[in-house]
Amino acid sequence: MERVSSVELYGSTLEKRWWRRFDELVRYKAEVGNCLVPRTYSPNQSLSNWVSTQRRLYKNKKLQVNAKTSLDDERIEWLNDLDFVFDVHEYSWNCGYEELAKYREQYGHCLVPDRCNENQRLGDWVRNQRKAFQEYKLEGNRANKKNRSICTAKMTPERIKKLELLGFVWDVKEALWFSKLEKLKEFKKVYGHCSVPYTYEADQQLAFWVCNQRALYKFFLMGTSSSMKVDQVKILNSLDFVWDAQEDRWLERFEQLREYKEKFGHTVVPQRYKENPQLGRWVTDQRVMYRAFMEESKETRSVVVQRRIDMLNWMGFCWNAMSQRATRSRN
Image (cartoon, rainbow, N blue to C red; front, side, top):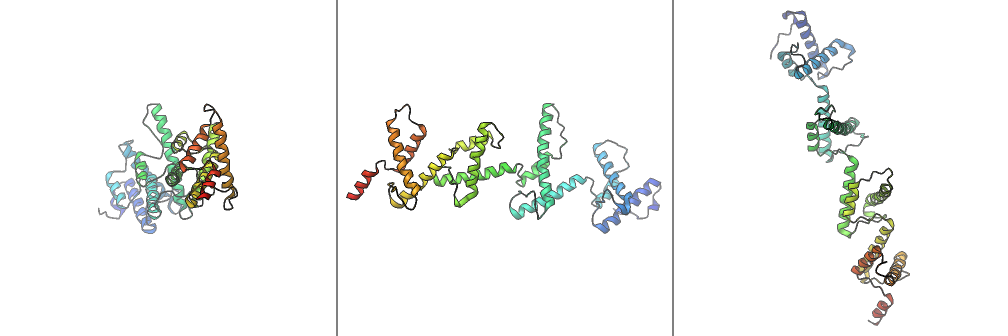
């Protein structure tokens, strides 16, 4: 569209005033590069007020609040030609989304730190999206209870869909938990159990996480404050997760015995085994445990001990070390 720039060609005072402000906005954009005039703009507060008015009139027109608005389609077209922002909040959200898309392209994920030195504005924006999402869910629940469909939170189904297309994580703690869970599954595939040793050098963070799950579980059982959830307990139980640290230490020695057998071909660990004295004492304790277990009646036998004996039998554990040594010496 082409327009004669002189405002004198327009009849009414209001018409002239509108086009005068429009010309001021054109000059503002030529100088600044956009039409985002601040709400408090000391060089020309009248222009700032006018810009706010155009946005309000546009919103009312869209909502059909006032059909006789002075902002007609022709004026909207002129403003659109200037890339005028009618909805500042939507514009700001889209800018944040574009920055997040660039971040994901660079780092491969959307887990922007709260304190993002590289782009603190983006860190704040991401945090606000999670907060808005929680408000959206809460308001949605209230609306459902009252049979209403109105939700005033800043989050919308369209924004949720766009963010999820980027792989946006709504609950960071939950995402990190499932990330560790996947690593625990990989550990179990290799070693056959979930008892990651506390001194597991290959992934010390996984070892700490396993210890933390046990601590949280204790609070969970006592009914005190704990971030452990029922679903998380069920998931870990499905993996035969060991909640008892003592059981964990037993499994750690079991793993050491497995490595010993791979190296030497048998399970008769010397009591004074210099490379690992604790393993030598542990093996002796298992034989003492076994003899005590066999002397008990079947009704009183421990299920835990039975399971340990079954695991040792699976490994080919020698319950009578003396006879094994005698056989080996004859050969």
